[in-house]
Length: 212
Image 1 (cartoon, rainbow, N blue to C red):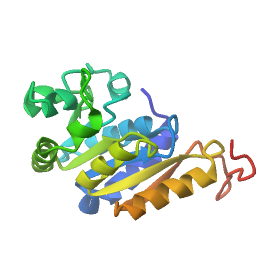
Image 2 (spheres, rainbow, N blue to C red; image 1 turned 60 degrees about the horizontal axis):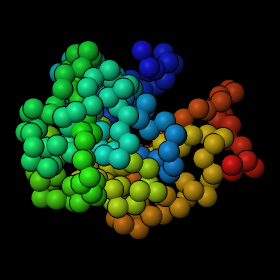
Image 3 (spheres, rainbow, N blue to C red; image 1 turned 90 degrees about the vertical axis):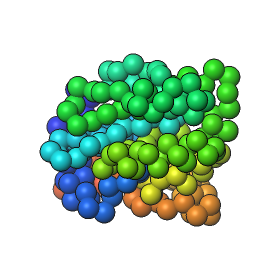
Image 4 (cartoon, one colour; image 1 turned 180 degrees about the vertical axis):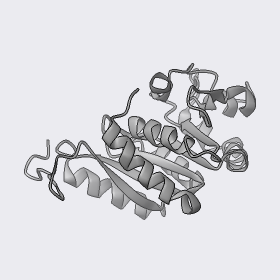
């Protein structure tokens, strides 16, 4: 399985305690690629699905470079792009996973269509409305903030945004810039998850001198 037991324990605590307040689409993003947003999305989705009464959806909204299908070991199409293009229904695109109450909506294939235009459509708004009705909790794997147009549209369709920050890798000024841009566009950043933390006692280490 793709998560470590220690990460799973911490994720379980965060998820279960937030069920009553966060049972709506949540966007998971990061400042730059390779910070762990997709793995975090998959981890959270799997753990949330273990709560007996929860119907959980993991949704890949990275229409340019989706990677959740590989993590969850399910087909990568048809998916969201195909639904937004009117080629399949949402029901046809949502796939089952090996993880009980967890369903998955792949990114699908754009076939030359502009991802930002697909996401910024009335069809996308209707799809998110339907997802809200069908699932208790939806975790939306979102492109990094550098894809400003994609993140802005997806964030507006979600209840809030969670930022993933990979410690000792992501430059602190990039994190500040990303948060500033999200907040300047009235997108609700509800939290941050620090990936690859080195824990000594109760303190996290973050080498601020190495912004590379």
